[in-house]
Structures are given as structure tokens and as C-alpha cells.
Amino acid sequence: MKKNKSLKVSIVMGSQSDYKIMHLAEKTLKKIGVPFEIKIISAHRTPKRMYDYALATKRNNIGVIIAGAGGSAHLPGMISALTSLPVLGVPIESKKLKGLDSLLSIVQMPKGIPVGTLAIGEDGAINAALLAASIIGNNNQSIKNKLNNWRAAQTKSVKKKPK
Ligand code: RP5
Image (cartoon, rainbow, N blue to C red; front, side, top):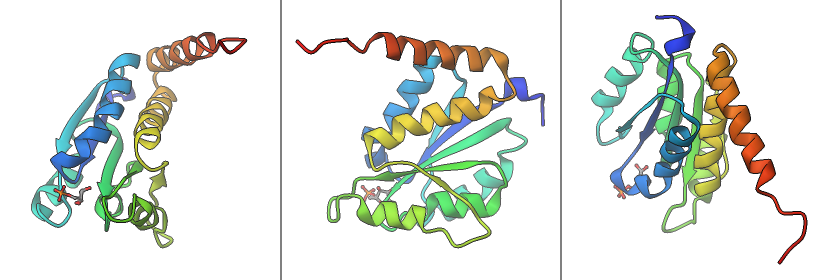
């Protein structure tokens, strides 16, 4: 693996349909200025793609993985089973159970293989990006500064009085 400085975030999702939520993780990383890649990988429809991806993460200079999935959302847990890199799971709001199925599938990982679980949907996708930036920023002062600037701008944008 190269020096921490060049580590990037990898965003993966189980389906094209997840992109309507996961594009917010992409947008947030772009806005802060964190290097990333983005892919569709399905644990059940493309298991070999998932396996090959997970085993190649370290040599591909990935520092954190954000995995979004809906329904029986096993993608984050399966990737975490294949790599010791931090995996952040984003539960996608499903059509039938509004994402409660996704949330419980991702958050209830049995001990031994962790997934850091975020909120369902948009908030989870954005916070996953912020958390990924924070993890990369631990060993990369430039990313840490960019994240702190983003947070300062957010603080500044909160008005003192409602209109
Ligand atoms: C999961 O199944 C995906 O993460 C997606 O949220 C859900 C539905 O997928 P599509 O039927 O829309 O492709 O694998």
C-alpha cells in the first residue's frame, strides 16, 4: 500500500437504483475535495465482482469503503468479511419497508465483522462521506483541513433567527 496521503474513498452500491441516494455521498466528497472512486457491485447479482473488488482494495489505495444497499442489504457486511478496511454501510430506503429492512440488515452484524452503520437514505449517504473524510483525514492533514473548512462553512450558514 502507498503512503496514507494518497488513500481514497471507495463508494459502492448494490444497484443503479441506489445511485439516487448514493450520489449524495459522491457529491459531498467532491465538495470537500476527497479523492474517491464509485462502482456498482451487487453481493448476490455479481458475487465474483464483489469478491475481486474486496480483495483488491488495499492494493488499489483505498482507505475507507462506503457501501450502500437496500432490502436484504448484505453488501457492506460481505465486503467487511473480505477486507479489514473500515466499511461504512448506508441503508437505502426500500420500496416495501421504507429502509427498515436495509437498516436492520446492515446494523445487526454479528460480532467479529464490523460495519459502521449510518442513517437510512440521504442523511446516511452524506454522513458516510463526512465520516470517510474524517477517517482519511486522520493521516492526511490536507483532507483534515478541507473537512474542517466544510464544517466551518456549514456552521456559518446557520442563521441566528428564522425568517
Ligand atoms: C439491493 O436491492 C440494492 O442495493 C437495491 O437497493 C435493491 C433493489 O435493487 P434493484 O431491484 O432496484 O436493482 O441489492
